[in-house]
Length: 95
Image (cartoon, rainbow, N blue to C red; front, side, top):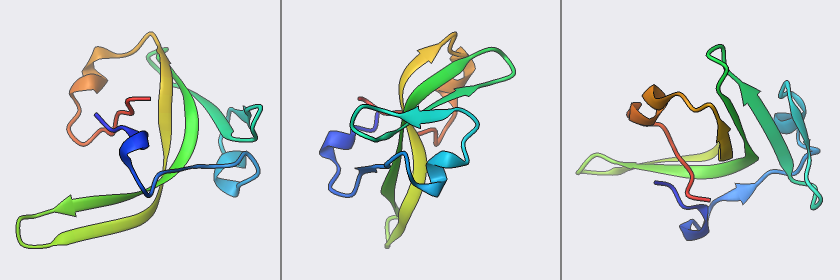
């Protein structure tokens, strides 16, 4: 489980960024962060804050760093699809 409070590179995105404004359903929180809602075909819904993060992958011999990854840090789910919880590589946020 990903915990953004334990990351030195995690950064919430402001609602004025182009990453935010291209989302189909977005808005601004009271402190100007990018809030989003995304609905899936199966009627499941996720809501959260858009963020940047650097992902680090280790292969045993070296590390691969991917800076500036934009993703949704999901804070609530409506009608969650249980199958999504079993998807390898899905980043789930603890916050």
